[in-house]
Length: 91
Image 1 (cartoon, rainbow, N blue to C red):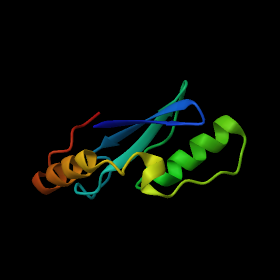
Image 2: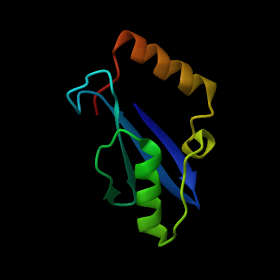
Image 3: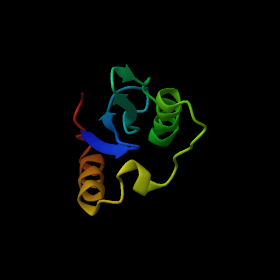
Image 4: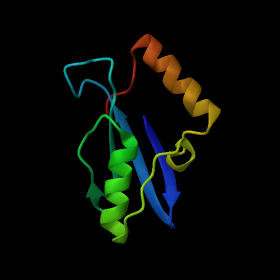
C-alpha cells in the first residue's frame, strides 16, 4: 500500500510493507522523496521526520496523523481491514 502526502511542496510517498521483521503482524514503513529512500522502520513518523530533515536541512518533527495523511477515514478503514485479515500488500 502507498500513501502520498505533500509537505513544503515536496511529495513524500509512504510505503507500507509486511514481512519485514520476525513479527508478521507488525507492518514496516519507508518513505521516498525525490531520489531518496528511507530504511524500513516500525514508525512512519520517525522516518518521515528524518527524511524531511535531510531534504530541507531543518529540525522540524512530525508526529500527528494529519501530517502523515492518516486523517483520511478511508485510509484508516482500509488499513484496519487489511490488518484484521493479515493481507497487507507487499511492495
